[in-house]
Structures are given as structure tokens and as C-alpha cells.
Image (cartoon, rainbow, N blue to C red; front, side, top):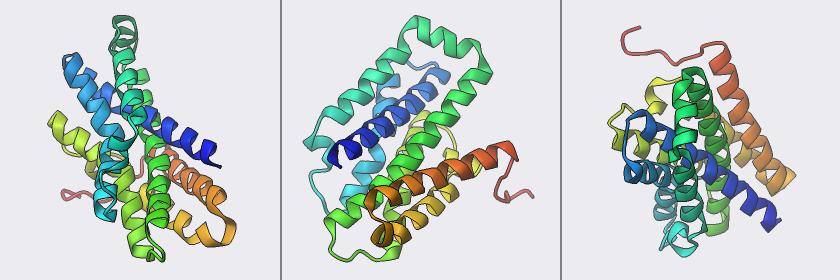
Length: 209
């Protein structure tokens, strides 16, 4: 069980780190900026989650493996060969960013719910869903703010809404089907909604509509 959880956490960390590093590359940042964006995207949501739940110091500072994976992934992407490959093909760049964001969003959404169940005896549904969305989307918001962009969750595809749906599904299923099935279903829900929204160009109504 714990090995499965660790694997999911590492995959999510890797995915979000790549997402952050790609944004840094697009902004023509130096190696330090790319690493900071990768690290912040990977661990930012988890830090906010732990502070909300009163779990201090946050898990990121207790186990350096997550920060190490995030920085290592960002460094690999900064390699000239990798960087030029991604930046040369805009379609590849956009697809990479989309899939990394989607994977990280789904995994960290359900990890937030798991953390709430582990920290509290009887967490309410609102808290579970809120913590799940914050964990899933928080790192991306910090990434975009540091990069000087309008946060992705407010303008691109269906993002926070997908996290909200996945968190709700996971939280409702947790006590009936068990931890792992609920988490996998939650991740699948996020991925499905994100893919459908991209394919059919779903977006929430904008202020100018």
C-alpha cells in the first residue's frame, strides 16, 4: 500500500515539476528560475495543504526526496538537447505541458484528500474537497504568479473544475470502496474531464462572453 502511495506521489511530483520547468523555459528563465518554478509547482500545493491541516513542518521539509525529484527533473529539462527539442516544436511543448499538468492535478488532488483523512478523525466533505483542490491546483497557481501569468486555472480549459469533480468523487467513494480504488477513480475523473474539455474546447463562461 505505502509503496503504491509513494509511487503516485513521485509521479505527481515529477509531472508538476516538468510543468513548472516548461513554463520557465517558455519565459526564457535562467537555470535557477527554471528550477524554482519546477520546485514550487511540485511542492507548493502540498505545503499549503499541510498548513491548512495544521501539519507542521510540511511534509516537503520532512522528506527531501520530493524536492530532490522536482529539482532533478527541472535540471534535465534545462539540458540544451532537451530544451531545444521541446522549444522547437510548439505543438509538442503544448501537449507536454497539458499532460504533465493533468497528471499532477489528478494525483495531487487525491493526495490532498488522503492527507486530510490521515490528519483528522472525521473530516467533513467540504474540507476534503477544498483541501483536494488546493493541493491539486495550488502549485500551478504559484507557478503562474511567479512567472507573471494570469493563473492557468482561471483562463485555460476546465482545470480547477476538473480537480473539484475528482476530489468530490474520491471523497464520496473513500469509505465505501477503500482508499486505493477511490484515489484511482478520482485521478481518472480529473484526467477524463481535462481530456474532454481539451478535445471539445470546453471552457467556463468568461467575463467578455
